[in-house]
Amino acid sequence: MSKAYEKNTITEDGQLLLKKAERDQIETVWDRYEAQLPQCGYCEMGLSCRVCVMGPCRVDPFGEGPQKGVCGADGDIIVARNLCRMIAAGAAAHSDHGRDLVEVLAEVAEGRAPGYEIKDMEKLKRVAAEYNIETEGKDPLKIAGELAHAMQEDFGTRKKELTLVKTAPEKRQELWKKIGVMPRGIDREISETMHRTHMGVDNGWQSLLLHGIRNALSDGWGGSMIATEVSDILFGTPAPKLTAANVGVLKEDQVNIVVHGHNPVVSEMIMLACQSPEMLKLAEEKGAKGINLAGVCCTGNELLMRHGVPMAGNHLVSELVLTTGAVEMMIVDYQCIMPSMGDVAACYHTRMISTSDKARFPGMTHREFHPDNARELAKELVTAAIENFENRGEVYIPVEPVNAIGGFSVETIVAALGGTPQPLIDAIAAGKIRGAVGVVGCNNPKIKHDYGHVTLTKRLIENDILVVDTGCAAIANAKAGFKVADAIEFAGPGLKEICGSLGIPPVLHMGSCVDNARILVLASALAKAMKTDISDLPLAAAAPEWYSEKAVSIGVYTVASGVYTVLGPMPPITGSMNVVRLLTDGLNDVVGAAFGVEPDPEKAAVLIRRHIEEKRENLGLPF
Ligand code: SF4
Ligand code: MSK
Image: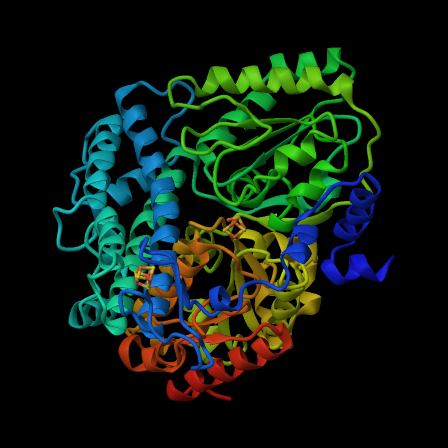
């Protein structure tokens, strides 16, 4: 294998398909990244501002050129404003996704969403109870309608605090109240960030960042949590399922349909259409042995968690999946779908379909999904994919898939532990499990593809640290073979013993990006059981290859929830040492946790292990 391909990705399928892409003259994300180098240093440091048209402005980090923008904003203000706007965009993306699910729930309640139904009645009642909705003897559709309405209220401005915030440990809630970051309406916090960062509004870098925290909390304990809870209600709470990952999940003799994006509202309907006898018969008539549905990114994770649908790849290989020539149709919704996908598909027979009223892409056919037409449209699209099978050219699927187990919701983990988190707490207290870490987030061409996730995860589990993961990190770890029961071989002796006795892998797949809310719920359950706050526990988080604004929001709400979080790529904040010091140290005194930044996963593992041992020592747990 040429060194050039090894430089970009550690995955075998990625390297082989990069070679194929070169042969087919396909431009990839890595080519475009190279073409951008050197990237703008002002922007990298967060020191450029285009908030208004007196600018754009930049502040010279060496102190020689201008130190203030035209309006008088200095480096601290500009960096803080830029970061807050990233948080707002990330929180908006997750929360708008959550809103879409609530709208489907409302339509189901009204009987206007054929094909969708309430799959988890128990969860519907439990979540309704959180919203103080009476459920006893009530028709489930009525409960669903009332819950959808109550959740919609969480998006507005009427309330003093979001409903699901009360599931956080009491000490944490008290702290948020005390420092003034208790999130109110989800839309309100986003809107207030945009207001505060307008020219001439909030010019205190500390007060800006404090509001950034409140905004991010409205995502983690609001929009994202709502997205996860409603997805479980509508499509079922995940339970462990056997699945597989890497491009080898595509099948040469079947119609391959790939779903890409984030929202299960579309992908669930596509899955049902793929399973229908009518479609399977048509596929057979067209010479295919079946219909193979696979995922890319988080809408794939949603299907993997609930149904074991396999994953063809994560963010950075989304273009490469198409270079197999084996994909009859890719159906996308929103978020993390590179606008280049249509260009790549045009070189093969692949049909590209966009489905969301809020996301268009060049080179794609737009077929909009709504709750009332989803079932019929899904069938129409699957039919078109089947008909495209005969147009296939050369097919190149160069690897065998790797098996994995997905579907570890909090409910499943607690059930595996015997109905209470106590056995996990006992294992942590005895030192068999030193602590737990959430490895989450994206890929980014600035870090060798999957190297950050896989190396960090490997180092953590071999040191008896349980890993839970989501998003593209979870797909990387599945491809690396960390998600089968036999993967305990990679684990240290204590973790091996515990996971071995429970029959679970040492790396637990907890879902999509919005499902980081599941990790919050788990951390909260541990803290409550130990009668303490999340920040006292031997926990950490990492986003070794993050790229997205959503990841900024996730990182901030995780830290604000009391969890030390190590980022791989440096966020654009180095233009302000005040902001850097606050985020990497000062926040410890404010929320009991802070950020670390370390692009080398070997070193990040050391930082995390040190942190976990320190927390253990503070709790008086054995070394
Ligand atoms: Fe320049 Fe200030 Fe306008 Fe930003 S807000 S572009 S720093 S004048
Ligand atoms: S898809 S946000 S690249 S994890 Fe959720 Fe992956 Fe990051 Fe998108």
